[in-house]
Length: 132
Image 1 (cartoon, rainbow, N blue to C red):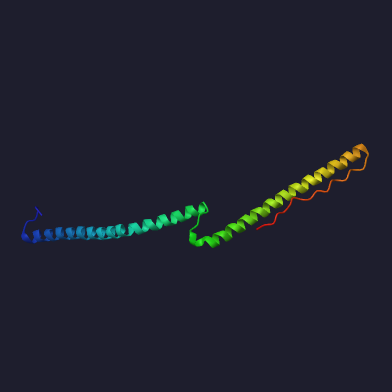
Image 2 (image 1 turned 60 degrees about the vertical axis):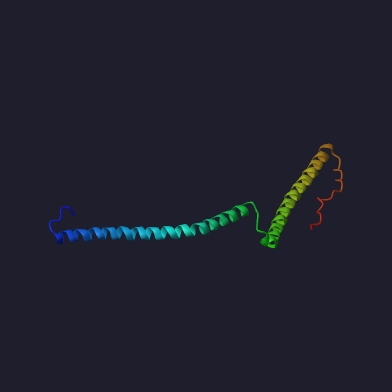
Protein backbone atom coordinates (compact mmCIF):
# COMPACT_ATOMS: atom_id res chain seq x y z
CA UNK A 1 0.00 0.00 0.00
CA UNK A 2 2.93 2.36 0.64
CA UNK A 3 4.03 1.99 -2.98
CA UNK A 4 0.65 2.95 -4.40
CA UNK A 5 1.10 6.01 -6.65
CA UNK A 6 -2.48 7.21 -6.86
CA UNK A 7 -5.94 6.55 -5.39
CA UNK A 8 -6.93 3.95 -8.01
CA UNK A 9 -3.90 1.84 -7.27
CA UNK A 10 -4.45 2.38 -3.55
CA UNK A 11 -8.04 1.12 -3.86
CA UNK A 12 -6.83 -1.98 -5.74
CA UNK A 13 -4.29 -2.74 -3.00
CA UNK A 14 -6.93 -2.11 -0.35
CA UNK A 15 -9.30 -4.56 -2.10
CA UNK A 16 -6.48 -7.13 -2.17
CA UNK A 17 -5.96 -6.67 1.57
CA UNK A 18 -9.70 -6.99 2.25
CA UNK A 19 -9.77 -10.18 0.11
CA UNK A 20 -6.93 -11.64 2.14
CA UNK A 21 -8.66 -10.69 5.39
CA UNK A 22 -11.91 -12.25 4.12
CA UNK A 23 -10.03 -15.50 3.32
CA UNK A 24 -8.51 -15.49 6.80
CA UNK A 25 -11.92 -14.87 8.35
CA UNK A 26 -13.57 -17.69 6.31
CA UNK A 27 -10.77 -20.10 7.16
CA UNK A 28 -11.02 -19.28 10.86
CA UNK A 29 -14.81 -19.62 10.89
CA UNK A 30 -14.58 -22.99 9.09
CA UNK A 31 -11.91 -24.16 11.53
CA UNK A 32 -13.93 -22.94 14.51
CA UNK A 33 -17.14 -24.64 13.29
CA UNK A 34 -15.31 -27.95 12.78
CA UNK A 35 -13.59 -27.63 16.16
CA UNK A 36 -16.93 -27.00 17.87
CA UNK A 37 -18.43 -30.11 16.22
CA UNK A 38 -15.47 -32.20 17.36
CA UNK A 39 -15.64 -30.95 20.94
CA UNK A 40 -19.39 -31.55 21.10
CA UNK A 41 -19.05 -35.08 19.70
CA UNK A 42 -16.02 -35.98 21.84
CA UNK A 43 -17.89 -37.19 24.96
CA UNK A 44 -20.09 -39.53 22.92
CA UNK A 45 -17.12 -40.81 20.89
CA UNK A 46 -15.19 -41.51 24.09
CA UNK A 47 -18.19 -43.21 25.72
CA UNK A 48 -18.62 -45.45 22.68
CA UNK A 49 -14.90 -46.21 22.61
CA UNK A 50 -14.75 -47.14 26.30
CA UNK A 51 -17.93 -49.21 26.12
CA UNK A 52 -16.59 -51.25 23.22
CA UNK A 53 -13.18 -51.52 24.93
CA UNK A 54 -14.81 -52.70 28.16
CA UNK A 55 -16.94 -55.22 26.28
CA UNK A 56 -13.87 -56.62 24.49
CA UNK A 57 -11.91 -56.93 27.75
CA UNK A 58 -14.85 -58.53 29.56
CA UNK A 59 -15.28 -61.12 26.82
CA UNK A 60 -11.57 -61.87 27.04
CA UNK A 61 -12.06 -62.74 30.73
CA UNK A 62 -15.43 -64.41 30.00
CA UNK A 63 -17.51 -61.77 31.76
CA UNK A 64 -20.84 -60.94 30.19
CA UNK A 65 -23.70 -58.58 31.02
CA UNK A 66 -26.40 -59.97 33.30
CA UNK A 67 -28.96 -59.56 30.51
CA UNK A 68 -27.20 -62.32 28.52
CA UNK A 69 -27.12 -64.75 31.47
CA UNK A 70 -29.21 -67.56 29.88
CA UNK A 71 -27.16 -67.56 26.68
CA UNK A 72 -23.89 -67.47 28.61
CA UNK A 73 -24.93 -70.36 30.86
CA UNK A 74 -25.81 -72.41 27.78
CA UNK A 75 -22.48 -71.64 26.08
CA UNK A 76 -20.42 -72.37 29.19
CA UNK A 77 -22.34 -75.59 29.85
CA UNK A 78 -21.61 -76.79 26.32
CA UNK A 79 -17.92 -75.88 26.69
CA UNK A 80 -17.70 -77.70 30.02
CA UNK A 81 -19.37 -80.83 28.67
CA UNK A 82 -17.06 -80.86 25.65
CA UNK A 83 -13.96 -80.50 27.84
CA UNK A 84 -15.23 -83.18 30.22
CA UNK A 85 -15.80 -85.61 27.34
CA UNK A 86 -12.29 -84.94 26.06
CA UNK A 87 -10.80 -85.54 29.52
CA UNK A 88 -12.78 -88.76 29.93
CA UNK A 89 -11.61 -89.99 26.52
CA UNK A 90 -7.97 -89.27 27.37
CA UNK A 91 -8.21 -90.98 30.77
CA UNK A 92 -10.02 -93.99 29.28
CA UNK A 93 -7.28 -94.35 26.65
CA UNK A 94 -4.62 -94.19 29.38
CA UNK A 95 -6.48 -96.79 31.44
CA UNK A 96 -6.84 -99.14 28.45
CA UNK A 97 -3.16 -98.69 27.63
CA UNK A 98 -2.25 -99.51 31.24
CA UNK A 99 -4.47 -102.62 31.15
CA UNK A 100 -2.87 -103.78 27.90
CA UNK A 101 0.61 -103.22 29.36
CA UNK A 102 -0.28 -105.24 32.48
CA UNK A 103 -1.63 -108.07 30.32
CA UNK A 104 1.52 -108.06 28.19
CA UNK A 105 3.70 -108.21 31.31
CA UNK A 106 1.69 -111.15 32.69
CA UNK A 107 2.07 -113.02 29.41
CA UNK A 108 5.83 -112.37 29.34
CA UNK A 109 6.14 -113.54 32.93
CA UNK A 110 4.15 -116.68 32.13
CA UNK A 111 6.40 -117.44 29.16
CA UNK A 112 9.50 -116.95 31.31
CA UNK A 113 8.27 -119.24 34.09
CA UNK A 114 6.48 -121.69 31.84
CA UNK A 115 3.26 -121.43 33.83
CA UNK A 116 -0.04 -120.37 32.34
CA UNK A 117 -0.68 -116.66 32.88
CA UNK A 118 -2.74 -115.96 35.97
CA UNK A 119 -6.11 -114.55 35.29
CA UNK A 120 -6.24 -110.82 35.70
CA UNK A 121 -8.42 -109.70 38.54
CA UNK A 122 -11.72 -108.44 37.32
CA UNK A 123 -11.36 -104.69 37.20
CA UNK A 124 -13.98 -102.34 36.15
CA UNK A 125 -13.19 -99.34 34.00
CA UNK A 126 -13.21 -95.87 35.48
CA UNK A 127 -16.59 -95.20 36.94
CA UNK A 128 -18.69 -92.81 34.96
CA UNK A 129 -20.66 -90.67 37.28
CA UNK A 130 -23.97 -89.42 36.21
CA UNK A 131 -23.83 -85.94 34.84
CA UNK A 132 -26.26 -83.36 36.08
